[in-house]
Amino acid sequence: MKKGQLLTRRFSSPALPDPGPLPASVPIAQAEPPESMELIAVPTGVNNRMAAYAYRGGSVFDRRDFYIGAALIKHPQGDLLVDAGFGRGIAQQFSTMPRYFRAITRYQLWEPAADQLEAAGYDFGRLKAILLTHAHWDHMSGMPDFPGLPIMVTAQDKTFFDSTAAPGHSGPPSFGPPFTETPFNWQILDFEGGPYLGFAASHDVYGDGSIVCVPAPGHTPGSIIIFVTLPGNIRYAFVGDLVWQREGLTKRVERPWLIQRQADTDPAGNRQNLLHMVSVMQRIPSMIVVPAHDQRAYAEMARLPKATAKSLIL
Ligand SMILES: [Zn+2]
Image (tube, rainbow, N blue to C red):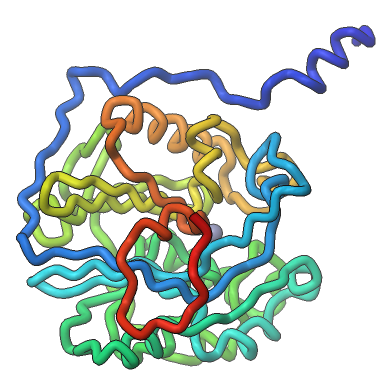
């Protein structure tokens, strides 16, 4: 390779090709969300990272504390927590993780989701399940704080979790045996619902189109995207760790190569779903996309009363 070519390659844009909007032939499903539906951010802490870790082209000087937490969806048929964030046992759970991972990870626990709900006088009888975007440690830590509560997860990620939690496993990161001794009430998600926004299959949680999950494998084998539609046709997409920060979608950039190899079980699958989500955003520009670790996405949501967690970065 000539020197000029090398320079071009080195400094060319890391952006993926623009896939264009979802074709007009793909129907946009309408929802009938109940009037009382609400969406509430439940931040439980942060993981200290930087933009250069989050996406290609990000700066090492751009500090990006990753949101670690949940989102509470209030629905008259039963509330859902999207992910669980850090729980009361995070310090002990973290101590069981691979040494290399502990060495590169700094986190701060603010306040576990269960404590925030308790402080707010929340009626735990309303809570139907924790709905996991995927089975990684920073999305699952708070699960033992809700004993017996159904944990909705894909079959692929249940298997993935069981394999990564096995003794001697060295990554991608999950928890060691002390975490898994808690018997979880797993509830496997089926995608019986047919195509949704161009994704091949779907699961409509309450049958009213207000909460619809689609498979989006790649980051983990059973990662999902959760589409939430609130009254007034306010549309959200909880994309889990499809990207770590919004720039992944707005700039069409993947995780840095070395990090991608560690973080994603199937980088090509993740890329395909990333580009599909870009198409959805071009077709529905008003959709609010929520990467699980982007504080800016949650900063615009309501919060629980009396939550003592620090304010989020806007
Ligand atoms: Zn993850």
